[in-house]
Amino acid sequence: MSEAARPRIGIGAVVNHPAFGRGKIVDYEGDSYVILFKGPEVRRVAFTFDALKAEGHVGDVELDRVRHAVREILGDYGWIDADLELGKRWVGGSMKLIPGKEDTQPKDVPIEAFVKKIIGIRDKLRVLEQKINAHATLSPEEKLELQGYITRCYGSLTTFNALFAAKESQFQGTGKEE
Image (tube, rainbow, N blue to C red):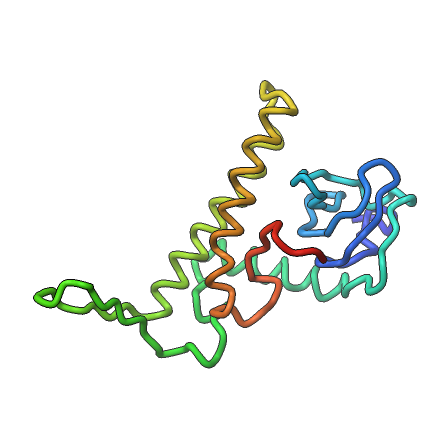
C-alpha cells in the first residue's frame, strides 16, 4: 500500500465530511474509510480525500492495522473465538435460563458459547451491510431502508455490550449521540 493510500485517521474517530456531515469511522476497506453517517448511511471515503477532518482524537491507525491483520489471519484459520472478545470477568461463566413454568428444568448456557453466537450475528450483519451497499440494482432509498433495519438490529444487540472486553467489539445503535 503506497503512503498516499494509507489511513491517517483511526477506527472509532468522529469525522466531518463537507457533503455528508458528521460520521464515525467503523472500518477500513481497500483504500477507503468505511464511515457511518447519521441516517444511518454507510459511505466509503478514500484515504486520500483531504477534506475529511477528524474531530478530536484521531485514533491509532497502526494499532488498527495490526488488529485488522491479526483478525484476518485468525479468521482464516477459524481461530477467532469468543475468548478473544469476551470481558475477563465473564470467562468461565454461564447464563442461567430460569423458566417461568415450575415443572421445567432451568438451563445453563456457557457465556463463551453465547458470545460466540452474538459475534456470529454481528459478523453476518456486517457482511449483509456490505452486500447491500455494493448491490447494483437497489435504489438509494431501498439501501437506506435496509440499512435502517440493520441499524435497529445493532441497537437491539447493545444489551449484550457488557460482555465484550473492547469497546470496538460492542454494538452501536442510533439511540445516543456521540
